[in-house]
Image (cartoon, rainbow, N blue to C red):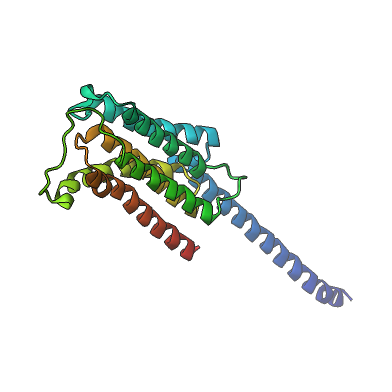
Length: 239
């Protein structure tokens, strides 16, 4: 009788042991996930991205304003003291303001839907248009430096292109460091970087020539937009 009872209990005990093992495995799984989450949160970059939207926007805007202030106060153009035209200041302030607005767009809260592609394209086009308009503004003063008639436009533009790219990369890095990995935010970040680079160039470059502005200044923004659009496409294709 006891042998028959033991035979009946064996399957039940086996299933109980399997259930305990499964429960143990699930506990280990959850502990492993919790450990991975804690390790990720311990990273400085993750903690930075988890800050409130107002804090992330404040850090980004402070960084880009700091760069503009550094150029204007520490290494300004050689003729900065001769500037008399209000349009010079209006252009610098306008591009900086547009860059700040684009920064707010790029670093949106998590609950706000991502901007549709056509609005990102519109914002990018507006940024390019702003730099083109600046190229046609009047000279900031009467004795401004102009490009020689026989000068190689590309050769003269290369120093400004290099300086602009050097200024743009830190701005773009800050935007992407604070962004919560939105594909289109990469493109908006490119607009911000290009705009602030153009403000830096306006404050640094003493040459006043429309062709030079378009080739040496606006090109920095265009190059960044093309590059960030390629990054956005690559990231989306891998998602």
